[in-house]
Length: 81
Image 1 (cartoon, rainbow, N blue to C red):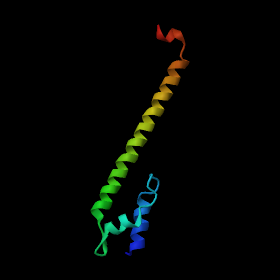
Image 2 (image 1 turned 180 degrees about the vertical axis):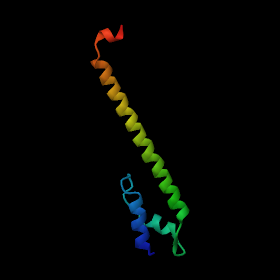
Image 3 (image 1 turned 45 degrees about the vertical axis):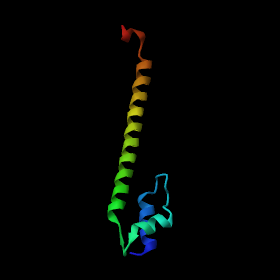
Image 4 (image 1 turned 90 degrees about the vertical axis):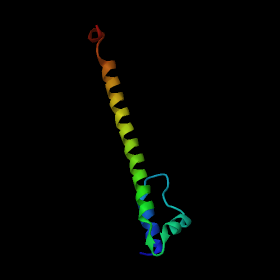
């Protein structure tokens, strides 16, 4: 696997985050002795997974809260007595 291939794979793994493509200096640092440093790539992917899933969970909870609040506002005042 060549340097350009490693750069494309790392860029693909973080696509959709704020870092669309890592600079070649970072990728060349990961690419040592002909093999990719899988530990660092795995750690970066794990971090991105935590960030994405946390954000998704927070958005789901916020949506549920909004739905519940709208529903409570539509109920008649007699419901609250």
